[in-house]
Amino acid sequence: MKKVGITTVLYLNYFVFAILLNSVGIVILKAQKNYGVNELQASILEAFKDLPIAIVSFLIASFLPRIGYKKAMLIGLGLVAFACIAMFYGNSFDYAKLLFATVGVSFALIKVSVYSLIGTITENQREHNALMSSVEGVFMIGIALAYFLFPAFNDEANPDSWLNVYWLLALLSLLSFVFLFFTKIEKPTEISGVNLADDFSQMFKLMTKLLVVVFVVSAFLFVMIEQGIMSWLPTFNDKVLHLSENNSIMMASILAISLAIGRILAGEITKRINWIWVLSFCIVCAMLIVIFVLPKTVGLEVKTIDSFRDIPLIGFAFPLVGLFIAPIYPLLNSVILSALPKKLHSSMTGLIVVFSALGGTLGSRIIGWLFQNQGPENAFYYTLIPMSLLLISFFILKKITAKNEI
Image 1: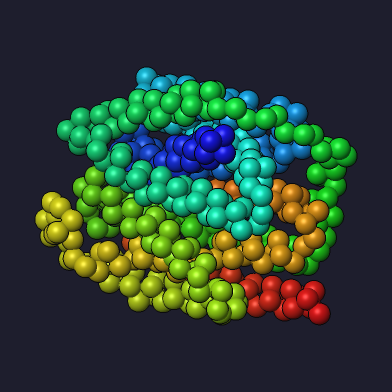
Image 2 (image 1 turned 90 degrees about the vertical axis):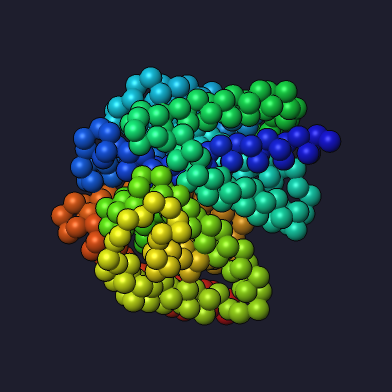
């Protein structure tokens, strides 16, 4: 019964934060329309979300057991509930920055706690993998729901109506807070010899290994692609396909859904096929979609579009790129962690979080600059550059890990 309660807490926390974290693309679109900022200015919201995740995750990893996972999660949920209410009343671009900075800090507390708790309530690797997959699955459901939740509150005749969604998100955060408060979670045992100085030292030592350098570059490139597309797809739908705000946002859900399906399928496929061929096939297919599908999407002769039924089928095709980029990140993480001793997994996880956050921030910033200076119809073509570099990095990683196996 106790295990069920803790598991429910993990699901609730990740569900709420999935909606908030992945609403950044929606808020980028609203910021341009409501707050008078341009594409490049709006792209800074990604940095306000990702950089706090990277910094706080790194800094708290060593002493979070002293605070306690339950207390850390309660702090995170309380901060987010406050930030959502502040966004409703603040209703400005500065408050949007504050919101995502708070979400980033809070998610760092939540993520480290959730990942640590999964290890304490599971008894073997099979249980650990199953619960981790379930938690990440709930996260993907939250991502997809965000694209329907925000339009449900949006009335284009009233530019401030969408802010009402933050009352619901604040309520969900507080409900999760209350449920967690009454759930008994034992304070973790502190690990002797682990402190901030040791974490820094291990991370810097890892950065001297060629395997780790190639990996962090690969992770950086991938998140640059994924977050760049995810954050700017609603704006692309609005400015290129000329969809209504609500349809622009809901159409972006196709990307989130295809990401979820892609990760589930890849987990089964890699049981039978070597990871290098799965990743190579996926990145090549993603490049082909950019080369051949994107031009047809951009070249649509747009007529009056009032609902999904009025959108030509080709308009649904580009978001399916998520189906092929989805397996890359988890498989890359699996490759690097499998190649390192378990005692280095914590330090490696810190590097993964840091470089993923930096890649997400830079990716959104670059795409925002391209939207503004090269036009929204051309911006996504530039993802071919990191995709090509990523394909090369796969084979370098394969060669290095093969030597390690020998």
